[in-house]
Structures are given as C-alpha cells and as structure tokens.
Length: 237
Image 1 (cartoon, rainbow, N blue to C red):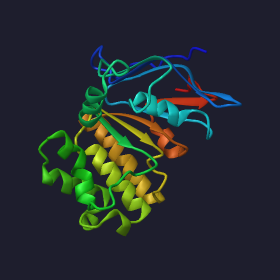
Image 2: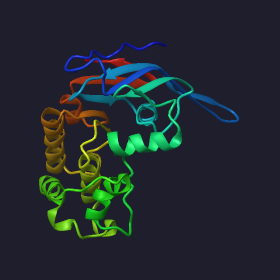
Image 3: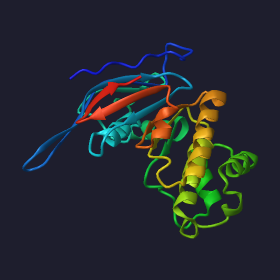
C-alpha cells in the first residue's frame, strides 16, 4: 500500500535531510509472517520535527531503524542529505551514522565503565572530531545534569541516563536526530525541558528530528505528524 508523502515545506534545498521511498520490511518465522513496514514513503525538510505515533507493534520502531540505517529494507530506498543508505558499504554507513546522524533510543546504550561526560563525547572521539568541552558543559547545564558528569551510568537515575543519551546525540550537531520515546524515562518537568531543547535545536541549529512517541505533548509540537498502523504510514498533518 502506498502512503502519502509528507510535504517539504521549510526545506531550503532540493536535497532533503530525510527521504524514503517505498520502504518495506517483513519478518518471517516458521509459522507466521509479519509485515512490519508496508511500502512507506516520506520526506522531512531541514529544521522540521516529524513525529510518528501509533499503537505498540504498529511498526514505528522498525521504520525508525530503517530510516537511521540500522536495518536494511526488503525493498525501497532511504536517503540522508541525498546519500543513499541502502547502497553504502558497512564502513561508509558507520562513518555516516557517526557524523551526520544522532540517536536517542529507549535503550540508552551508555557504556557502564565510562562517566556521563565520557559517554557524551564518545561518538566524537570515535569519529576523530575535536570536542569543545564548553559545548558539553552548556548541554549538561541545559539538561540539568551538570553535577552528574563525573558519575557512571549505574549511579544515575533512568531520567538522568536519558538526558546523557540526549546530550550525546545533540553534541556533534548532526543533520538528523532519530528518537524513540525520548521523554519515556523523564518526569513531566524534565520532559518539557527536553521538548524546549528539541525546538531550539530545530529552529536555531536547523537540525531535523524524526521522533517515535506515545507522548501527546511531543506529537503536538510536530511540524509533520504521521500515524502508523500495521506497517502502514499515513500523514495526519
């Protein structure tokens, strides 16, 4: 089933940060076949916030994995800033994810033997990119974790670990940030502060966000809102 393609209003170039055409992904087991993503097409412009909502099991996270180059579709194409992901070799795809894409997923993926600060700067260290420690401190202050930077993940609450993961995603200033339930581990106040930061990064830095969420407040701030059900994506606004 072909979905409607999102408008590209707000894009400043014909090369869009996120473009997908005809994405499909099917999971097979011995007794069942599940179509997780069913012929999905979408595009998101520079500085836009796109939110995908839908029930659990609808295929939202599978779609996010495809868009971020973390999984390979059975059919279709994904482009980040005009670069086709499905044809890249592993090394080139890894390099692109390190430099041009940020990730905030439900599993924080913090290294337990590294401090919060070390976890935040790790992607830039791996990419060989210089780190501005003032930027780290500014992000930590904005996220309310300035006094936790020297702590290990096991010494942090779930919400604090989430904010470390968010700082790690924002620090390199990637073109696109993919987020799966970014407010899921945060209380209402912290969640509101995170939404303010996402708006700031989109408006001031021109970063593009694609967010999967059940949080109505996150959905309400979207420039583009989609609903996914049984692998099918439809635009709501």
